[in-house]
Length: 557
Image 1 (tube, helix red, strand yellow):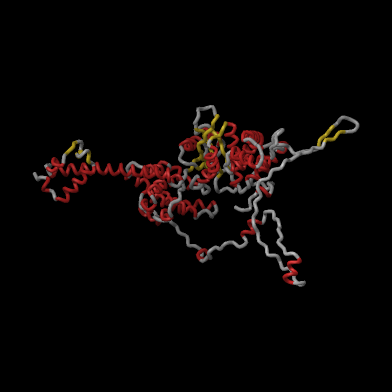
Image 2: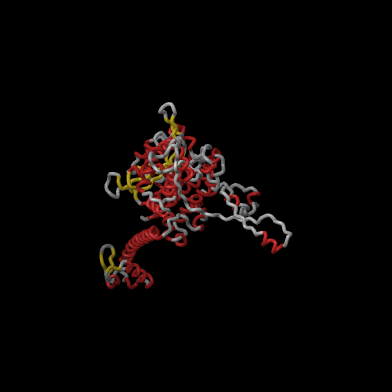
């Protein structure tokens, strides 16, 4: 039997190099037994081959574990120190469409339309002339004249001179917030022949015996719920302007007016919301200090938004103590249509129990791979499975975006013709890659798409469905920014009031209104209770109502 010394030197040294990869305290462990180098040299060729094959398996497992560990460390560093944006290098987004050839789908999937000659020869757009004048045209103007005196003119021109058209330039001036006291004098009349007394009409106040006015409360509402300022910062700003308005008083005004006036308007928005065909949903945790539970117990702010294809957008927040399926089940009761969400299982339970249907979010599927690519770095990730997955999902988005301007009836047919083959090819590719992957974040990302396949394909059924749930996430952004500033909501009443006020603020922004002016108008109108006896009476206050004052509308988009 040949001795190990008969092995070629290169093969023997390769074997020793592999052995040393798993060196343990100066000895090698192979198939459960430890060997010294001298013992290995005395082994037969067949024994060494057996040991080598065994070691190859062990090294392969070791390498996979090492790759998973490196991936986890990179992702942890990215989450701690990296950017939160999901945007990647352009090289990651625009290439690798050819990957669909692996599933032999490309020629079937892409039906490229010839562009019109005018589109090809269209000149490069230039900066619009007169934009500054357009932006400033609705602002009040104070004319400031700069002139020479008669004596100065005589010194220069003598007795003869004429005035030409003025040279005009514009500057934008800022006036800090000013405060003034409204002193209402209500005339009182009495008859001369009896004790009958009458008073002149006066506007209805927001709260009895309170100094608060619609303009003041609108400023506080806009500061907290639009600009994400905690009430203590607003309190300090008032103090810097010689006003003493405690934050406890401001909180009381907001909660009382929300309950007394805004809640009925919110209910009308909810009623209209349930009549839409496509809505989006999401949720985010929030801490409430005094909710009857132990400190640190998580509550949740749920958000519901009408689909992005609708001109009349409604955004509604709903505060709940838990994340159970009961909450969306009650909120969406009587809703019949599609709900676009992430992969949270609660929504899938509703899909099975209720008359609504759940559509998945492609942005969440992409996000799983984007996290891996960001942790690795775009250059290092190039050619990886995660980068390829992003490219394939990007191709689906790109193809679907080209259908945006088509009429709804045509868009569905084109989705079936051009987008569906890309989707089918993507899932075929994902399942193939998952079979060859070991444990790790990449396999987790692949499995997310595989497990969500049923819901990610739903958008192909209806031309009005978006590919993702980004609209709901954008609607939550204002709340999340505010939460980072004020950290905790003090009470249940405050949490419910916040849900109502955030709903109206986000709905106003989504419909291109000025939130301050809109809240001021609502606080002026809603106390007139005689005008709002039934739900439809609130329609004149809706963000798209033609009865809204001109001041409520933004001219710039």
